[in-house]
Image 1 (tube, rainbow, N blue to C red):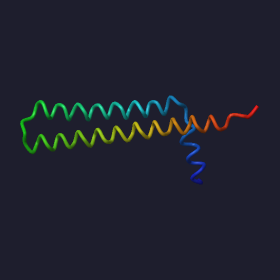
Image 2 (image 1 turned 90 degrees about the vertical axis):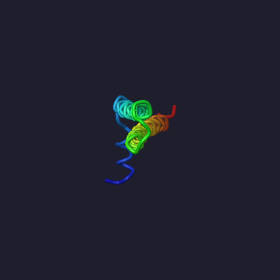
Image 3 (image 1 turned 180 degrees about the vertical axis):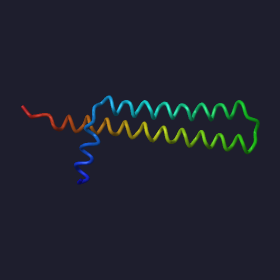
Image 4 (image 1 turned 135 degrees about the vertical axis):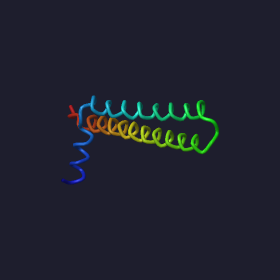
Length: 88
């Protein structure tokens, strides 16, 4: 399947599907923040605290990437729909 057709299929999904992906990314992002906050508040300064904080940062980064990909998907879908409107 050509790249253009795959891109078209990727951005022309129902908005609800893209929004679910965005919500998932936000939930993962905030879960990572909770892990970071919990590590800083509940653990004593040690290697364990650093490892847990690093894990929280990785979780936060993953959630951020998922949410931003969903935002780009929604933006491209809206721009494509705008440009495809018939001219009167």
